[in-house]
Length: 240
Ligand code: DC
Image 1: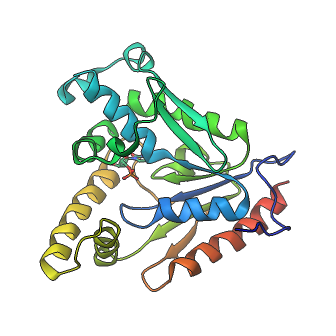
Image 2: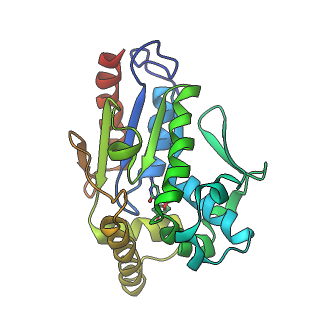
C-alpha cells in the first residue's frame, strides 16, 4: 500500500509520532490500527498481545492465577518478555521466541482479564509499551493507550460500536455462523469482558479526554480507517 506523501513517518525529528486507538472488545481496534499504521508508515503496537504474552508466561511457569495479584515486581521482571521491532510493528518474544497462535488460545483469553486487573503487571507492561516509540512512530491500540500509556499522543481515537455489531464481527472473524443463538451468546461474552474492563480499579477502559470518538456501527472498515488516517495526517503534521 502506498503512503500519502503529506504524512510524516515514524522517524519525525520533533513531537511524538503517536496515534492511540482505544475501545471495547470487538470494536475492531487491532485490525484498524494495523491498517492505519501501514498507511501512515508507522509501527503497530498491539498492547493486548503483551497482556496475553504475560498471561501465557505465568501459565507456562505454572503460577496459579490466585497468586497473580500477589506477584511482586521482581517476580514479574524475571519473566523474559521482550518487544522486537519488525518492519510494520512488533513481535512479542517470550523466552526469546514468538508464541504465535498460543496468544489467542481460549486458555489465555479466559485468564488475561484477571492479569489485567493486577497493578504490578500493568506497571511491568507500561515500561515495555513506552519503549516502543524509541524505534519510531507508533499506532498503539488497547484499553488505556490514550489515558495512561501515551496521554501526550497528538491523536487519540476511541472506537465504539453496538454490542450486537461487535458480536457479529467477532463471529465473522472466527469463521463462525452469525445465527441468532450464536450472536446472543457472543454478545453476553463481550458484555462480560466490557464490564470487567470498565469496572476495574486500575486503568479502566475510558474515553481519553480530547479523543476523536468514532462509532463504527454504520461505517465500513475502509471508512473508519480513512477517518483516522485523515485526522492523523493533521494531528501528526502539527506535532512536528
Ligand atoms: O485486545 P485483546 O483482546 O487482545 O486484550 C486482551 C486483554 O488485555 C483484555 O482482557 C483487555 C486487556 N488489555 C488491557 O487491560 N489493557 C490494554 N492496553 C490492552 C489489553
